[in-house]
Length: 183
Image (cartoon, rainbow, N blue to C red; front, side, top):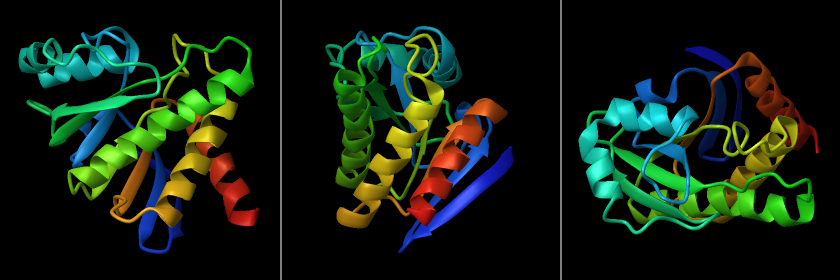
């Protein structure tokens, strides 16, 4: 695991790391899921493989998930106690349509974490893989949304991590941190 950046917002600590999200011992990791919640490629597939078959069995009972929404399950074989499954938007080139949907993913995930009393959460770079959301734009939306929630909402987790799979993604998140720290 490589620590890239950190920022304190009152009692909430934001951090950017480069790591495999399936190895993190946090209260919840966020799964960049598809609408079926039945596994797929990228982060979604990795989380399903690491959690084991019980995760798929439970996800089959959830009835899917709409874009921008989130649902919570146990973490099963993961070091994380829970998995929060959220469905990000497929980038269509229209920021006015896609940005709010991506924002909702972070808001709903943090709201679920707060509702379940979770103190630590780790997010992947939602929608930046096969959903083709521009990574720099996604990082700005993610960090700004989480900052707003951390500053305004009670019950927000104390430790919020942006767990990036690549140095490039981490650099986008670190730049977004710099923007909010100076803006």
